[in-house]
Length: 274
Length: 95
Image (cartoon, rainbow over all chains, first blue to last red; front, side, top):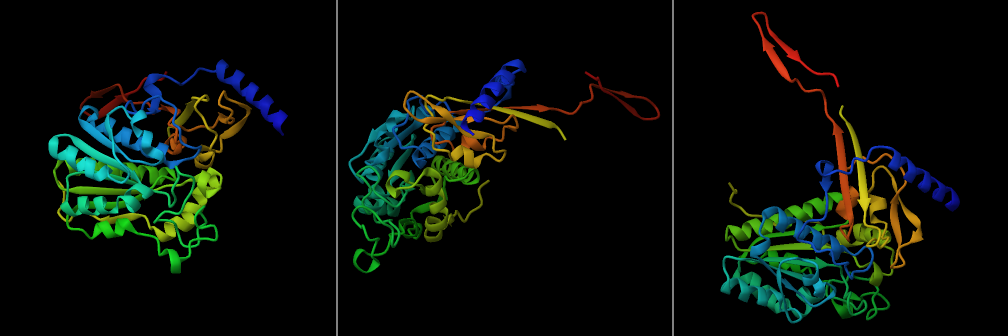
């Protein structure tokens, strides 16, 4: 089978040279945005962080706010986010990204400020900062990547780990009676009066990627209108620490994660936008 | 219906072979290569010539390394309309 495939590849390559190529600038329909740098990413194969970075870069490029945007990177797998996005970025102490973003926004109120945080950062060590930032209704965009595990440190149990899910610190599965139930922090935040827009999306399929991009775009637009805090949760995967291939991880996410963390808008603005 | 022809260009040196684009492709035209790139990953190759340029593979690619091209053969558009007393005559050019 393999030999045959190789022959077909070579034959196909010759055919492609023979016929006229359609790879011209006027036929280009999709490429990586300018805001995303050419640096190879350090993420594992199939990780959702890469798609989330690209969506942020696409929105910033399309809105033309590359010079006016300041991002705050968290501690976690996405700690090197500033290596990949061609915008001004700051690094925050573990869990304090939303507090640092608050300070930046108050000093430079005309800039677009967003924080990019994982579940160990936002929902565990930074719960206090996150809740109070949302309660104050700071004019920010918080992007929350939820993969239900501590990825960078080697797969320990996070507050968002599902019941029965195995991790290195819960080798027999998460026992709800001793370890508690998973923290639905997005539902918690949606109740706060300072939050203007709160939604949960995913990046597992082309349709969900398009929805996630729209949610991030809305977050930046509401920030321009000074409406208040926008909170976008992106349910993501962690193939390495879930001990699965990327395709299995996406399938498991659709079956298990989406059942516990249903996708959709949790809080939408009441007044109609013009 | 207008005929759509697509093509993709993959930066194989950055590909990590996660196979998400294979699952996303509605035409099943992608496959893992037999060779390895310099990082030691198998990379994606297009094996079928039925790409429609739908951009699904590029949307799910975590590395953002797929460029998508699409060429649509458009319908013949009128180049001129001559009006006279009885009605309009539409003129097209056959190329």
